[in-house]
Image (cartoon, rainbow, N blue to C red):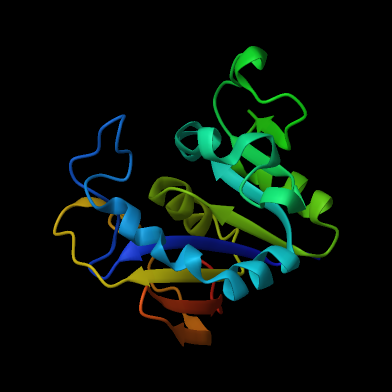
Length: 193
């Protein structure tokens, strides 16, 4: 069975966006620094080669589709992306031949569909704090992967604020650093709930 990994970039003070966010700057002023680690081609290629499918929220999809295009976040690898949403977008706004499936019947369904599509490879839950908190709170993730950027935002969208799940025990699996980020990967030992 596929491992489900919640993967997100955040500032050292725990924000996944800076404030204030605007339509032109969905990550807020300076928020692009959160993804500075994407220049590490070796790390990125390793992650994409292990990837089987992606689960993303609708906001992440809406903010990223112009950059992803039909191929999705995995680029030429074209891994399937399951977008959790209340309502699928107008088909005319979705890239033709794209890798996207819009899931309107809940997060659990999206995870289940992604696991089936991944064929034993990793399912990555990516995108916003809200989707991540929902996954962790529902006990749907096996691992948590954090990319800590060397910046303090002071305000923005907090990753773990409001996550009311009690104690969730984690085991460190990997820690690697570059000038752009510190990568941390944890196994979830005791799921939420």
